[in-house]
Amino acid sequence: MRSGNGVAHTVKSGPMRSGDGVAHTVKSGAMRSGNGVAHTVKGGPMRSGNGVVHTAKGGPMRSGNGVAHTVKSGTLRSGNGVAHTVKSGPMRSGNVVAHTVKGGPMRSGNGVAQTVKGGPMRSGNVVAHTVKGMP
Image (cartoon, rainbow, N blue to C red):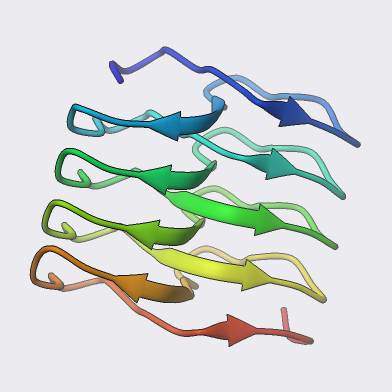
């Protein structure tokens, strides 16, 4: 995925803003900064700088990339990324991964994740199974 390219499986319940890209699956290459991929986005508008994705494989995650399985019940704010699984590369600073986020908006600097594989965690990365009921 190169910067400025966005592909999407499904987008619902809100407008797409500039810099948002959504996609079902990205494989066989590194994620570049400014690219966002997503399985499904519901319950609010996508803001610039937010990316959500089902699965990312075949390359390292670069800073500014966020991946996510599902985001519901709130808007995504810039700098937040949520993801189901990240494999086949190290996590770089500024990347966050998460399984599911419910019950409130994601704020910048918050990241939750189910599983991180295939490389070391770098500074600025946070991992968690599930976050519910909190902004």
